[in-house]
Image 1 (cartoon, helix red, strand yellow):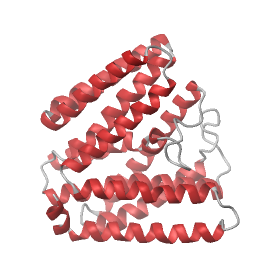
Image 2 (tube, rainbow, N blue to C red):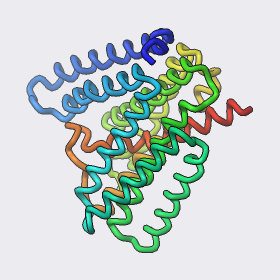
Image 3 (cartoon, helix red, strand yellow):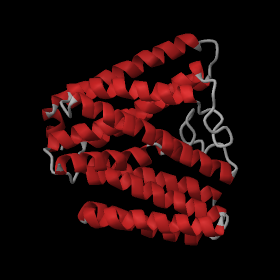
Image 4 (cartoon, rainbow, N blue to C red):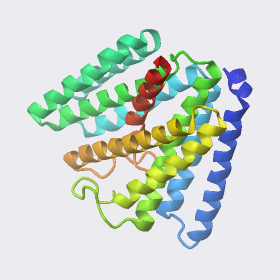
Length: 299
């Protein structure tokens, strides 16, 4: 609820700092690219003015907000994937709608059962795709993976923590995933020379990966310490885990796009591509953070 978030004034303050950083980035990009009306950099930064408020609103509407945000992302993902489906789109929509309804209902009402069932559905579809090697089966796999990964946003709200702490961890998840992507992008553009897997993603470099890890560690220490989420060693370990996880998600979805023969899943978000181009990291970082917190809390 709104009162819960306001009570956790540290999270609100951290939000405001991010908006201030975004405003400074917007001014810097406008100055640097003032001669180019539609520069890629300016489009990407301006798009965050749509993304950040949606994330902020979801936290303000806790507990329904984060669940609705995950649901919205899955619906937009389904819209994108349907555009590339070659078979019967009605059958594809039916399968995905049933999967989404199942994931939403179980994640909200039976979180532990969802945590067991959804990964097995994803693995079964992955095995089927490896057997058939068909585009349509890959699209189903991508949707199953998105539903499974984002269901852990809801799972985070079921952890045995104070409500204000759960909200803070959700903010940490969204902020760290975004800042890691931004850190990798900036380091890759400015310092990138040695590609990691040129056939999958020619823009991904070792320098970008290390830059993202360093940016994540700095952000994790500053944000996590301010919100009093964990000790310094734990925050550094979480940063490394989420940075590598986010990079892995990015590479997996990039590999899928190479198989599909597309550059972006859609043009929904100017400068970023489609919704799946934006949340590919979150699909991996959400379950990673959940299990890190779950086992830490159990211990």
